[in-house]
Length: 350
Ligand code: SF4
View 1 (cartoon, rainbow, N blue to C red):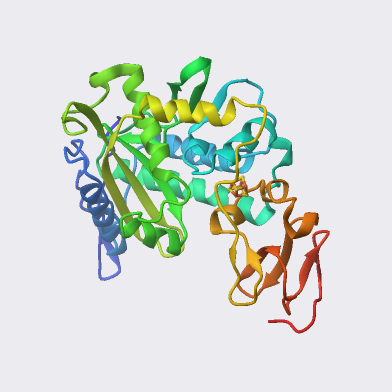
View 2 (view 1 turned 90 degrees about the vertical axis):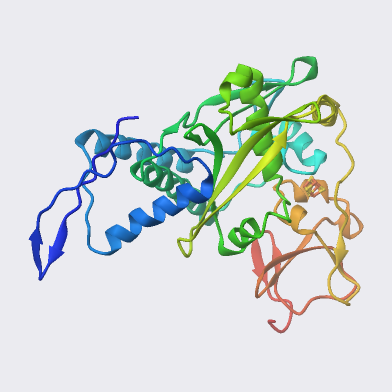
């Protein structure tokens, strides 16, 4: 990594007393996320106290390039497009606990809902925030490498999982997440609720790295043998995109097992979609039933639940805290219902 020179300017009585300090001469040796984020906060704290940072022309160009790529990646990525290659899965989709969703991803991508313009904007600035974080980590003195490197994990019968890792910080593989305050708290409390399969995704990246390069890919603090099995260390680095808070979650992961690999292939290498993973749940005490959180966020929910409501399909009601997808309506909700993508009044608003 080209080391950055941070020149610190002290302001005194409204005038610059220009004293230059070189504070980024050596790459910091610590690797664990808490240390990384402590150094990032220290850096920000210095700036907040009136110390400015100068970077070299090289750094400016690199930052402009990486932020530009993040912007275009966020804007143009995640499109609903047919797969051009057969037998290829993506790391971002193998963590989801529903095999039926994975099946739809592979066989019926055309049935997925388009994401909304609001969501597209959210994803775009989310990708930029993640890149801003990695640049701060660099400026704080760490080596950020392997950014957006492609990794491949081999599965049975010629299938593969392919994707791009976010980065490694001083050799430790990390996955950067820009999160809502709610999701941030979930990471901060230890990710007890991993509904979207983030751990499986990180475990997949680690396993792919190991498959490609073996032990040499990992520093001595990032690989260990426990009771005859190999475990690899990886971290989530999470940014609360509303409040600017940082947290990280570092854990040891076993390699993806042959059984897990076979289960992935079994769920997609079949002409018929697997059973639904999630059932509908009661909506209060009304007798109505609604989709679970996992299904509510699934782009294939309308296809998957087309037999609900006696064959009519999902019904969407616009409650004050967001849409609710009902699979069974015993009692009509007193809020507007979405019909053909247009709200239609259904009595008194909530
Ligand atoms: S709607 Fe639910 S059950 Fe159906 S594919 Fe999506 S996550 Fe799975």
